[in-house]
Image 1 (cartoon, one colour):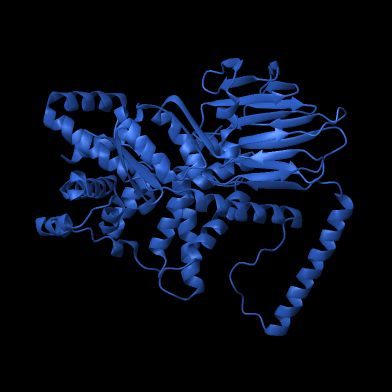
Image 2 (tube, each protein chain N blue to C red):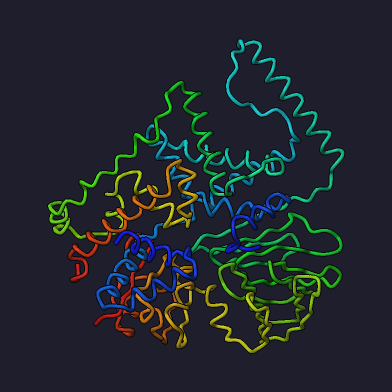
Length: 332
Length: 187
């Protein structure tokens, strides 16, 4: 039994070879007892996942600060371990270090005066933030997103960097284009309202235009350009690099701003990510059939319990909550 | 490079000084490293967070000079472990022998225990907490952080076979007690 249990979990973790996959398929299909064992081990594997990245994200913010503070100090002496130094001596060392630091900081300021200060704003699940930039542009940052922007923009252009999703209301300035940079594409505008969705975990990045005009530039050397009209959405599939341009449903795209969750004949598996964004819970499905259940619903400012109750009533699904996870299974 | 890239690809970007890559690696392994550090530290404390942040800071500074022979993940664990040893030295305490934690006996699978568990409403999290310390650590390294048996063996300095034994014990214990609980009959 040992090898087969381990094989099943390694299969679920994606750590098996092709040969092992074949062996497992044969073993699972050879008897109903085996198939049941497979299903049980799988349930245990799914239910025993315990990961929460919130602490890691916060810890990285601290580390990030430390890294940048250090960069500015220039490589210096970092105290490691304690040396047996007498008190007055220690004071002298500290004082001289402090003096060195002050002098080098002053020199640094003189020699590198124009290094732009970059601000990083981020949100965790369920959280939204309204950010005003130096030029009067308003950014509405969606949950689980990050925005990097300079405290002051330069004279030629306004560049911000986005991971995740945000809605932009760019203040007009024809002389300084406003550029939203994401991992896969850049959006260049002069003054307009639009939404950018570039979550790393999503397979596509999309730009949806409400007002005005924007130019979308693909990342990479070829750098294809696309112009968008109001009401149009461009989405880039990150896997096959296919670009789609189509009309979009405004309420569905910007629903996150008004706490609206719109499910239009979508599979629960596809809705899971939106629920995670809004409520900070992870949905765990008992099987594919549960994840494939299609629903039609519209929630505005609803509590998580109400959302789950509705899903459970209309989709014939049982759920239970454990901390920040929701387990869903079809009722028999 | 993105969040799904392998450690090696991410590391190649870190060497070039890309902070984004460093952040991905940090977030990928921070929760597991915290668990590992808390396991090795003498008492429940907040030291683990500082130790790991310091370790990563050092890793960032040394990224261009270090030569990784094993794997990125085992390198991270080794750096963290040596910082923990530094911590013990600074406090003039003896470093505990890791193997002392390793007494994964079979006694927890005795059927009587399972009967007691039946009385309770079993939650997976609770069941995991019942695993012996070392078995739990290994299971979580594999389950949550996707670390291979081979890397776990290198990190903990044990054989791949011991890793497998711990994994098997964890899975069969969780499976037996999970399905023995009345949860499935509507708890």
